[in-house]
Length: 344
Ligand code: TRP
Image (tube, helix red, strand yellow):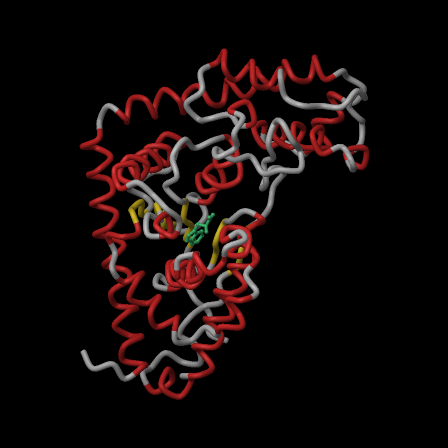
């Protein structure tokens, strides 16, 4: 198949109150990737409409996630930082993909089943269609690499299936329009590192989530030092000391989670962390973990607070990013229209 220039795309939903899981599982990896390839980082506000939402909150959280991107170290000049709804090509390509994707493919999406809950008939069409829009987000830029959490793997596979089917179904027209044997790349997920999935501090079997009823279950990026220390001190553990080998973390989800968080924050492997802390009691490990978390989050917190007082700057970043994103997306969308015989 044709080769495509490498390009990274990822999205974060503007759901507000970003936490350590969002940072370690997504944003910290976005920061690392910016040195490797051109990157687009998108606040996916259209995806946030798939579940009930408050308009005033949507605007606020869109700016908040943007501030978090910047505070964590994403450079808005070297990369493209923008909000999805500003670039109409995402929704435009999503319609094309609606006509490519099959009902049977979407019926297999496990996240829809989880989010829709028992009363599936009452779910929005947007929630059902969520992964098709996600495929359009990525492919409208012909992005090749997508850093995502574990839970998004199935959606990435769907994006690949859609790209593949488009390339197959319209292969003659793709070639006739000078695009060789494929118009879309098959985007690859980038899922690696010790904490791609950060779990709740109160229950090692549940994902860290800001919608958890217990605030002690997550560390918000804007928590102050005392709050962080207290939440880590209260984190659920088991009575055994820490193991010296990674294998010893099996069946110990809470210990595994805390060691994973330490490793991700320190840019080390879990094995290395256990070399240092194997045999230690949780009290000692937790206090080292609290110190490290506070050290890493303090500059992010203060920058987020500074940016929240400067909404004009944040808005100017989004406006500029959207202009640049649109300039990349439009030629691709026009090529898709030509391939499909849509007169323009
Ligand atoms: N579904 C992703 C999540 O919840 C967010 C998202 C939307 C996304 N569009 C995307 C991620 C495109 C990567 C690429 O995490």
